[in-house]
Length: 247
Image (cartoon, rainbow, N blue to C red; front, side, top):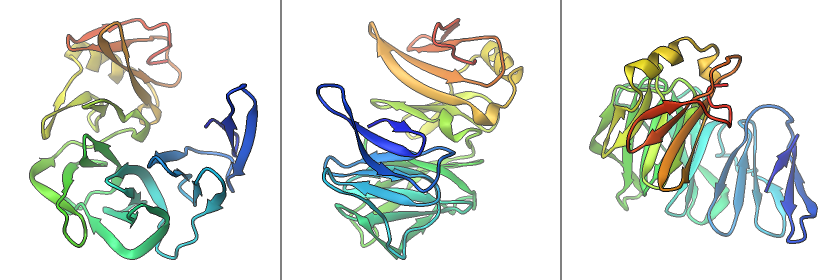
């Protein structure tokens, strides 16, 4: 489902585009979550749900202004803008939000950038810290993992990318970090860190991951620089990318 301006389209099998809905804003980023039955769109002002037939605005009083969104175990999960709180929808019902269905990443009282689910672990990534939560089945289903706290935050929300069990992003020290178990570890070398330090507008960087010929790649795009590079794993390499990474 591509987004053009503030309009969402469905691409049919014959490649024709059908308009499914329109947002109330026409600038900024949109977070999209998918539970297999419904697709949710969050533009940091409002939220919408497409159930395959209708496109409707989320009107629940408990729905907050968000900074990021993800999906796990039947719940659409959003972080509340400029706070350490995250909220969950009713299970299997993204149209219903209860103002009391929330918790907080209180390990350091950090403002959350975004939640992200990786292999059914809920990573709560903040400006300066990261916490890992899991579904414990309690009344509020998510519980902090005692060993899942890191003093590593995120410099750019859009640098966060996943592929399979991988999670990578640009941290608050302008390093590329990578999930290793319940911790984060530097993935970029000192030479790559030097390249990043010479970039401008690092807080607007955009990351994505993909697999090609058996290798997993992480690419990060910065504004206004002339050096395109990519990172590849499991062996860490940096090389010019035809896709314009770091550009």
